[in-house]
Image (cartoon, rainbow, N blue to C red; front, side, top):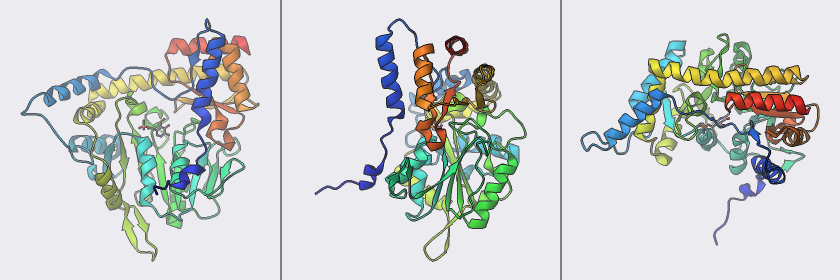
Length: 406
Ligand code: PLP
């Protein structure tokens, strides 16, 4: 008799985006003439940069030529892309990461979800609250989270991100083994300072723990004092794996390309305390279960780092940051406490009322869709996340409508 992995029964159904979709559909049915402006979901709205499109086309043409055609590529990604990333994203910023420590993939979602496979079943895991749900659900699937009681899994250690700690949790008093950090954060939009990140690296070194650093929104950092990579912090090579994505950097959400950095100094331990390097383990996992990102997509990603590509991606990100600044200033002027939106496409707005109530209010009175903070965890209650991924004119109209409606 075929049996299921019963850990899946412990998953809390993710009602968040389906719930939102149902409420929006019901509203639209009742108000067919009212146009709805969506500032909810974190998907980009603008086309790929020209440099990427040109590289994409050239690579597709190569695939049409028997002499230049490429079949299976290296599972870890082509050297041309790994070397470009290592130089521009790390070495040029003083972070000693080499090309062979970079694993190209089709998404940071898959990588942040899959990475937990290489760790023991009985480790203690710390997750942020509010959280990008993939970190929690993949550990529930693996049987590490325990029972779900009073809105939380008993087996997880929650790192509360609250107004009191500026939405950047400090390392816990008790030891944990695996720590998920995401900065600039989804959903709060808050970035981490060098000192705050150093405290986490020091903690991980002291406790022989590992940090999984999700930097999917790194391209939005404009404050030069902020670290863009955890490897800008001394000692991080031994205790951190970093995830990056081209999804928000260059509009690759539908094109799919990302990468994970696993430094060769990163160690983890077996039952008798013997050291093992995580690079070899992840390489084994990646090569066994993944067959590489398509050649044209990797060429398109490489083009992000050309002079032209750099200018174009900066302009793209600046566009969304301009939206974010407008949302932030307008919501603040309306009397709401807001964080994020400066080095991030997300604005975390304190509604001082139930998240869903605030969501309904904005939908029904202004025809604007946001994301209720409660959907990201207990600490999200009372907040909403507004996303800057839309056209500027739509953001302007959304803000004008909210101002009139509230
Ligand atoms: N990590 C975070 C924090 C995200 O918000 C997202 C997407 O919304 C991802 C990872 C997924 O990135 P990708 O499109 O590369 O799978």
